[in-house]
Amino acid sequence: MKKALALITIALAFFAGTAFQSQNEVVAQSLKVYELRTYTTAPGPLPALLNRFGGGEIDLSIKHGMTSVGYWVPDSEELSQNTMVYMVALESREAAVQSWSAFGNDPVWHTMRDQSREDGPVVTGVVTPFLDLTSFSPGQ
Image (tube, rainbow, N blue to C red; front, side, top):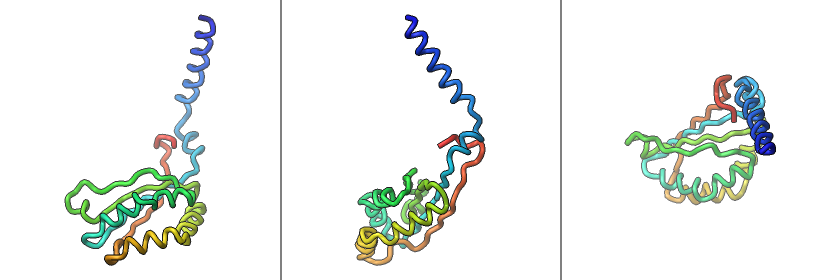
């Protein structure tokens, strides 16, 4: 009984310390930046883009230092036909430059990209803002 009470006390102390940690401290511990990428395709090739991502491109981005956060197709009827949105986390903007450079120079990616373009261009537009956590965001 004493051991159980001691373990509960330790656990409560740990969780209390975590629960009362300020959001500023949590954000300061996370130096990551987030990149939100929105791809627009020509009419028709969105499935080729989705297949490319699901068929190895995500693994390749992880290989080059990116952390996948999520991948989405918009809910609206119109945008769901030609838009994919995804987010990756990177250690810093400098790390992003290095990761994207290594990714873009990887011959495996060139093969994937070229195969997805066999029926014509796939991506017609890309928007890629970097996002920083605010002081009130949950810690990552």
